[in-house]
Image (cartoon, rainbow, N blue to C red; front, side, top):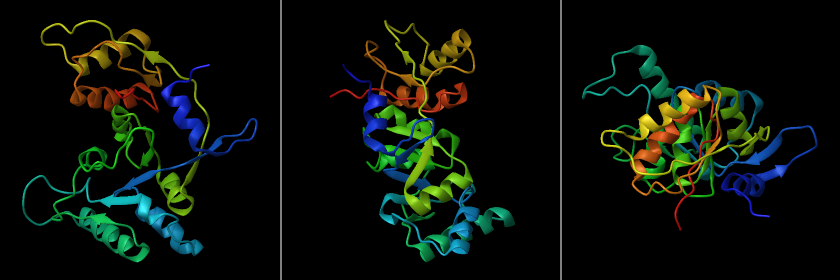
Length: 231
């Protein structure tokens, strides 16, 4: 019996799964930033733990970086950025700091740098992590406590969800974009909609549009929105 992309990725990353219990998933890539990591690193420090796989962890300065040139005046923003730099140095986590030339929006640099690949599991303490689903990855946002769990174990317990396939067929009318598609889908199905969206017949749906679909699907309660990648 054939399997969906979601089923293939999920099952190939299950470390342990007991009946009635969440599955323990292995995480291929953990993206982190300055806002959801200070307490997670403090937890490691207090427990005497190290980062399990710093080679599968990547940090960037993201949320508190100003859009204009010049110093950061907000004391809290500056403190969080300084904490990220210090924590990454202490725990051996690669950091793409501001000015490195490789920094950027945390859910964008993965595809930009070629780190995001089909078939991977990816997490980040950011609600737009589902963006990576546009590239055939199983990606989802997590909270600070889960960030700490992945840092310590490179795994995460997650209940296996139900799935739904959304098929967009035909040509888009003039002026209609991917944002209209996802908003129309939410309007039809409701705000507690689906999990797996698969591009099949809409050839005009460029990568930048599938990225938009996956990003906004997070706001549709679609925790693992994904797009099948062409061979």
